[in-house]
Image (cartoon, rainbow, N blue to C red):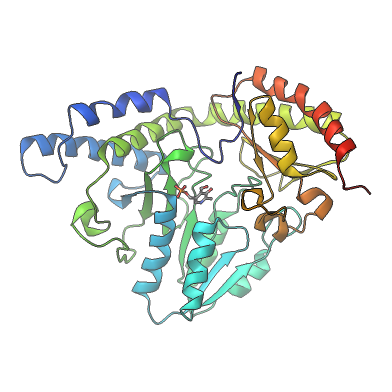
Length: 384
Ligand code: PLP
């Protein structure tokens, strides 16, 4: 059975160009890039190129890129550094809809005595600017707001939010793990101080990420040890993956505008195809302002887990808005924050597409979903 992979916000396929580019770094160029010998120096050149490729995608300086092991490490490091370098400030501002990499981190700092403001969202998952402005105080050490949400795809007004933080002299971090490679990010224009990316969301392997730290922003490393990454992140560089991430960023930079057009057209076709043929559906999130490949569709009165299992029977991979992996049918924290009605929230299903998806796959899903939902509704214990 063919797999139809519409779960690209969970992880993406490694691009063939990326796999190919990484190969020599397992077999031929395996030296330590910090070594003094020529062999080490040869490898270091490729790390430099990768750094330039990442910087080109973000419109920043290569020296502002720190390679890390993942998005989670980058998020943890950003908050850590902001608090460690400004020990007189004891307040963090974030949102209710962040990834656990931020939410669990700020909760840990809260247990250590920091004050945390978690901004709420409206029914479409949007922030309230007045609430945001009111949250910024002289005691605020850092604001961390995600660039795009992993569940519903909402894109947040980072330019505006960062400018407002800057006016007050507050550090601004954004978790751009879901946005990088999918939408334009221009750090020349946006006064963002720190930004996190994860390789596996943009067709590079799992286990590689970056933290961008703007030149001039004080930084204290989270990982201690050797002097790698200009003393900002200890640990021997994961050269093959760094090279892979560089190539993935390069591919994203070159194809971005075409991909935005093509992937959002596929997503819209899927969304329209499903919502026009299945009654009582709802699209979660800010449909005016979201990632090109993401749609989060709720089917009234059925369980998200059952939808996923049925889709799986046809080889269709999607994701649920309820925390079913933990054995609970509670809506996710994002849908909960959005106040999505319970009859919809627990059936919310995320389809996330990428450049490798095709119209044929979209049409296959459009054909399978309506009878599947009809069947589940007949069996469902939930009724109006
Ligand atoms: N931030 C967001 C918005 C994410 O979607 C994810 C992964 O799902 C992460 C952070 C964590 O990234 P990683 O898996 O590389 O640690």
